[in-house]
Amino acid sequence: MLKRFISYYKPHKFMFACDMTASLFISLIGMLYPIITRNMLNDFIPNRNYQMVVLLGIVLFVCYLVRMYLRFFVQYYGHVIGVKMQAQMRKEMFIHLQSLPYTYYDNNETGKIMSRMTNDLMDVSELAHHGPENLFISSVMIIGSFIYLCSIDALLTLIVFACLPFLLTIVIMLRKRMRDAFMQTRKDIAVINADLESSISGIRVTKAFTNSQKELEKFEKGNKQFVSSRKSAYKYMGIFSSSTSFVTDIFNVIVLIAGGLFLYNGRITFGDYSTFIVSINLFISPVTTLVAFVEQYQNGLTGFTRFLEIMDEKPENEKPDAVDMGTAQGKIEFKNVSFSYENKEEILDDISFTVEKGKTVALVGASGGGKTTICHLIPGFYQISEGEILIDGKDISSVTFDSLRKNIGIVQQDIFLFNGTVRDNILYGRPDASDEDIIQAAKSANIHEYIMSLEKGYDTEIGERGVRLSGGQKQRLSIARVFLKNPPILILDEATSALDNATELMIQRSLDELCKGRTTVVVAHRLSTVRHADEIIVVDGGKIIEQGTHDTLMQKDGEYKRLYLASTEGIDGRLH
Image 1 (cartoon, rainbow, N blue to C red):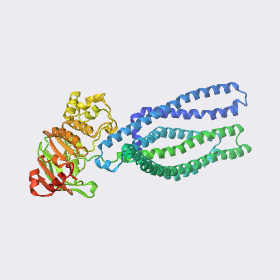
Image 2 (image 1 turned 90 degrees about the vertical axis):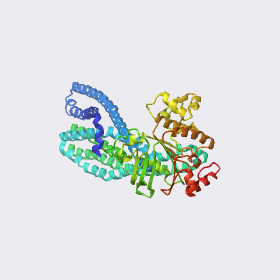
Image 3 (image 1 turned 180 degrees about the vertical axis):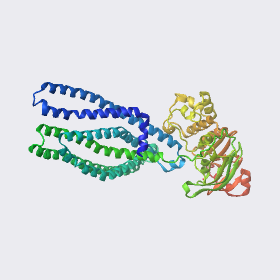
Image 4 (image 1 turned 180 degrees about the horizontal axis):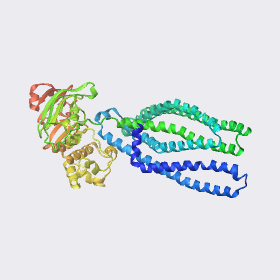
């Protein structure tokens, strides 16, 4: 883990070296004061050499001016290095998140992922800056102070340093407990962030059902858990800090007593004794810094550990020798396909069917039968357990995910629009498209006139998830996005099931236009909208139980006929 952390310093080697050099001079300048103090007490003041007193005072003043600049350099550029490292980690995490399979997002909440990318990496950034600096300065100061104190009186120095093993014992004993406490705190913060993200995203639902009190109770539960885990962390931090501070205080007691006895016995002079008392802070100060570093290290380490947990997640399993499939013609074949989520209960069992180029196949059946799963398997969102899925005779597992998905357009019931303008969201279908292409896509989706009625037209902000648009407008915008992409294969997964009748009829005309000349897989609750499909497949319990045209299936007097008749008895003609 340490090796992986250090690797992030490589792009900043020069600035890091400058930072460490500045830190070294800060440490060396810090040692000047007791050295000058000793010379003044033992030589210049007793011998009334006031010129040297003034001269050394001026030298010390200049050195402190230099140290002020060096501290600014370390504080500023050290933090810049830390922020750049944080930015690099965040970029790598974002890129890696883009490569993770659907199953990862099925099992991990957005708020928890966001917590790792923001809160955790912020503490990693602080460790990246302060960690090496504190470790280096403290090490230099401890070694330097030991050598200098020995030059005053080696025996007294060894007596003082004999307390170090007790300090190390405390650090070792409490380090693991602090690490575990910090890790639990981070997990609880992630839970709060996940609940908060969910509550804010669903604020309109909360208001509609007047459930603000329920949301508060959910939030308070996570908040109390956070307080509890934080109390535990603070408990060990308190024990750690008070215990280590007690040991460092003992240093002063030892110096006072042992030094006093040495002075009484004539082993050291009054000047040396006074200098030793002043100089002991050269040792205590870096020891205190190292003690504080242990806390910062645990905080940053747990953040980096959680960062690595995401980075070590396996990306989508694309074969090393996968090839670019180019532009597809559109023939789709399922051959004995079985599928289960993470080796759990089987969702699809031995599914086989073919959709010829430019034809439309409709998947119908009761909810939970496996229709949407079939749609998710065509773009390779999930890996099948058995069988093959072919496009134009090529196994989709042998082609790159990007080239596969560029050939597929998806319109779903749950439309996701990005926070931005109308233009931005249509452009998502093909980022390099011209304004003329965007307008033509909008016209094809029957939304151009509405867009032009807006105050800023295509530059109108639509709000988070398109909150300023109606359901039909969102759907038509998503259809325009697919028109712009212009894929040979189209998947319509219950694209109109959430709309009212009038809006659905309007959207259906846009979808009919979109389907022309494309291989289309349709999942629909309203069976009347798919009766003209080239083939209808009835899926139930993960199996295909019937397939054929509408007329053929109606003559069989089977499940499709029962579903169709049941749906036409509904008020809106939907399958219930």
